[in-house]
Image (cartoon, rainbow, N blue to C red; front, top):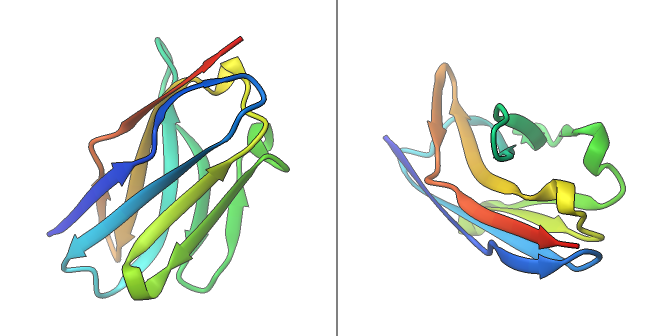
Length: 115
């Protein structure tokens, strides 16, 4: 089992910044991919950014140039630096970890961007 705890969400004005964190604990050996997903109100969950164990990074087109994903292996922590936030970035943000064939999710953290 892998436990994921997110933090860093909140309310921010358009143009502002937030930095999300996700701390992983438990049986974290063999993580193949870590990422952030979001679920806007009334919409499906979508990929925001992901980083593989080899360091390959993927971003959704809507966040390229504004968001940066990173990881600190020593702290077992995944980050998402979000700059130039827009109202359409409003969503619940979820941390996701893949361990071989298993997938784990955090509880989610709310990000609200006001116009």
